[in-house]
Image (cartoon, rainbow over all chains, first blue to last red; front, side, top):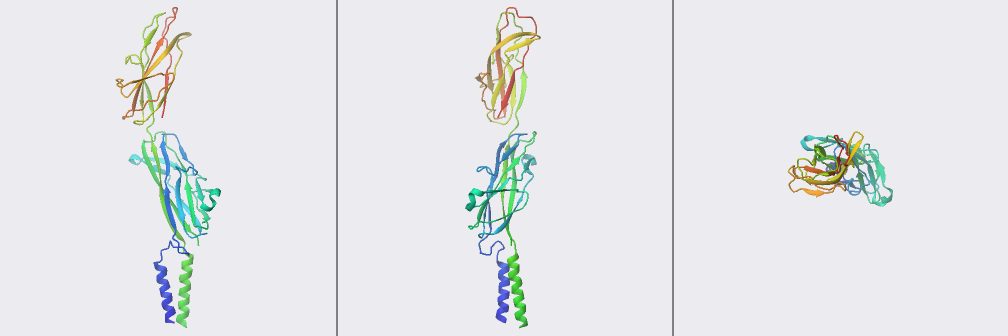
Length: 159
Length: 164
């Protein structure tokens, strides 16, 4: 009896010390920001679109975890980019501005709406890439200078 | 035995809690854009031929700081721009016209025309704004009044378009 009791206590302690990002197969959940969205030079009053398929300028995240893991993708999307003297420039994301791509199904990349959670399943290698585009909308009176904003993607491994 | 049941219950709770726990991780990227200073163009000085006489051609050189037409441009510092022109073929005074041709142009970084570069307004030009974001453009031309040119004040518009 005592042995079993200690076993339970030990398991409980182990549970408390195991990082929550370790999956059932012991493979950590990795999410990496690979590349930002680059709008480049824009002119006041002239919107600039970066397509999700733009290999050079679309943003990219990589995901790695246990094979066939069901996941949910959510974004924190900024409404503006911030520039000199706290000037802001509107940043808009549309219903088809994100793309999910599995290395195993590179020919069947799936577009999705980054504004709402998107559920999918990792491939047999447990890897995927997510691309995101958007639209910068400088005002006609937009102040000159460099503007930036942070885009955060969260992956939740579904139970 | 009672301890054993309790242990099993705790074990079951631990396992079920582990299985039900949602795992999350996140990463961030940056969106970037560089806004250029908008281009502003001002017609600063008219192309002025002054008095002309019937049958006597008159030319205003682009180097004539007093009489050549001048446009002042401001925009993004040290940035190339393309200049194109809409050039009239005649000046008008009511129903009367007078030919204008042989357009010449000079662009420079200063209003004193220092380091000016000549160009043909018919084909346009591709100068760069100065380090201060300035560009000055002068236009000269020739009028060829007919020997029976009617008296009057003749005018026409010369338009310059600037794009990055």
